[in-house]
Length: 267
Image (cartoon, rainbow, N blue to C red; front, top):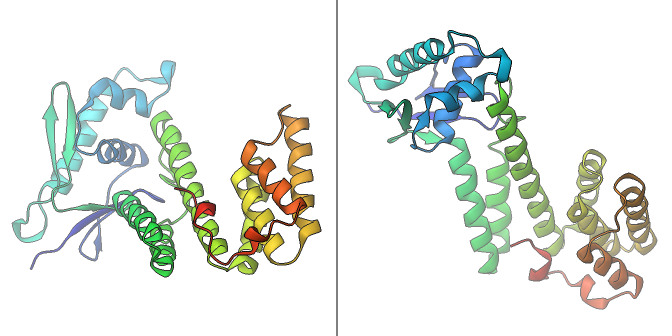
């Protein structure tokens, strides 16, 4: 019986063969696997693997041999599944390696696919489907991406993946507000803004949600708070989109009260 292999990077790096979790080894070995997985089948040179695992002067003399040992172990683990089923193949490519997923799946690919489907559904005016797809996509996350994986590569990718996650959360909330779910979105937006106070898109959405809930003064207060914070911490003023939202709320723009406003949803 065929058992699918799948990998997860939207949280701790994990792998599965059917319902059985694979023992992927030490955090550093998982870091090597993550670099190969996220290369999407492209060659990863040996020096890139080394630099991704160790910082500058911390690189041990045995670094190349250690990487080769990790790859050898991963090959044995992933190359063949139960009953001789072919799994993921790690091949030598130049002076490095490449990992072909084959029939295996990666949660990041699933996340990005659902995100594209959600945007397409929204622009076809399939509001409920768009919201559901976004919630399904966000449900794939299990904490911080690449959690527990060491090295500069994991740290840089973690930052980019965290930004991707936050952008998707922001998009979901914008869709909820545009579809009339503004009251429920307010608490979530306040929590996200507490963590990311200078993310103007979140402030813009919160202002709109508050205004649609009949709280014009609170909406304007959000703008004042953001403006002061930006000036004190960064020496800049709010961007054009946030300023426009402020002025539209100030003049009580009736269009903001529409239950559905496609322009309010990120592309």
